[in-house]
Length: 366
Image 1: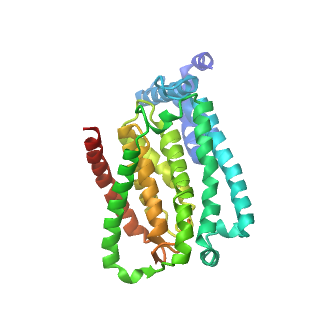
Image 2 (image 1 turned 90 degrees about the vertical axis):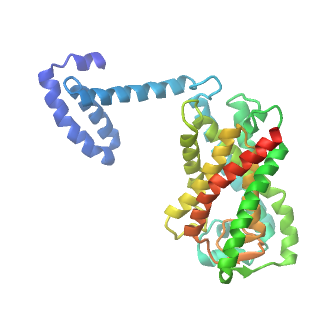
Image 3 (image 1 turned 120 degrees about the horizontal axis):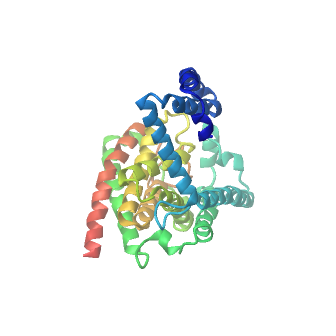
């Protein structure tokens, strides 16, 4: 192809480049499959005379070379090959969706629950869910994360042929103390901010504690909830972030990308429905950024697993919203998530959590 283009004389190539460039640019957002090749062809022709076109062509060539390198192998020795990573990702997502939905339907049938209610964001359906036993509804939802956890572990072992322990930590052994540090740090920060908001906005909270519902829910909270949070950490901070960390990206860019990816599936939660997406993206993205940062810093998932569990446990047992994705028996409830303040708190928590876990980690290794 390159030889064929080079045989075209400048008297033909330059006018063709000027003609094709605006056409390709206009078609880019409308028909990218046609606009991209026309634009690239135009810059090849114009690169014979114009420096800006040559610079653009060099940039495209470098990017294409990087993509080819990824397909052939990773950027560094322990970086997974793109093909294997894509196949592994498809295996994880497919297994999660198929088996997860199967388990959800199976448990819903056992508890005689209407599955459509569990996936609905309509106010009347959410009210109907709240009228059901919270422990059985939560179990029906949370059981779907068991295939995600197992599929991620299997993909890591089968497709990447890595030791499963290395997915959790780069150290010789998994540290439950670090998991406790992540849990305690996030819990302390959340309780501090929650108490402050409780004082300022007491009228917004409703006391909703019921001992008869609370006790059976504890069994779910300490069995299936850790499976859900660990599964998400293995997939987002383990599997996905392992690919993002190719040895060339900086900690900032990896954490931002990881946080953005983490926020996307959470935008389908019922508490987000009907709201502007900006603040929920900031809130979930900041949490994802925070967990990605400490995972990159410590080269382990220990802190993130503990912190994620603390976040979901506090929401399930202490303060929750009536439109929450997870049925709960929290002591206090609010009508809906105030996304503006929630996003602000999430952003403020990031440096505090990073600093606090760093200090506690330093004492642990001292």
